[in-house]
Length: 308
Image (cartoon, helix red, strand yellow):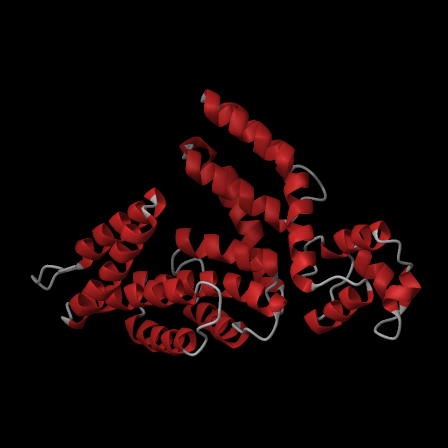
């Protein structure tokens, strides 16, 4: 489990709502003292251990995840409500002031920091580049000091690798995290499948980072490993989407090197997303496809047009 989130305190709330005492839930799984520290968000637990605690509470992992997400949404609702009101009114200064107030809080966690980073980047306030840079630096320090990425670090790194370059992360670090993603994508149980979604998202941004920064040989190798992984995990949530996202990245790698294989791969990807648009009639899917098409065209120097 991720020690920099609120799983412990939310689990305590769930346990107390269901009328269970600490010693009964801890049982022979962990000591009551360890459970107390976990519920105070002072320590983390392995997923297998946490699943046993949920079992002692009579709660399925998937039900806990729904409970956790609802609890987090309630806590975050007020902050985002204020931000949305300012966005609707066009008050960028008030948005910045709201973010500054949050960043001054002593107990601010990495999740809120990454939310603020995304907000500031989206409103594109040039004069606040210092605020954005300092917050980004702190997030990067937090991420790179943990031995194993938790949920919050996965989300933060997914965002960071989209907006950073080789001067921010070494290729050795990026490749190590890719290895961690590949190793941890699994469908053994509800929790592993749920967390694998985050690893799948991060894997895509890391591969795109390698491609964008010219690490073509390593990027091609890792893309092929990822494609084999998704092909062999068909019951993984969103496996089709991840497969074609990575195929698109591989197409970009080839096209950036003026290789004709990139055109063939690009056609496959565009055909897939065109099919999804026709099936779902979803504006977001259409926008995603249009952006993907423009990105592929931008790097296509082969002189061969796409056909889909």
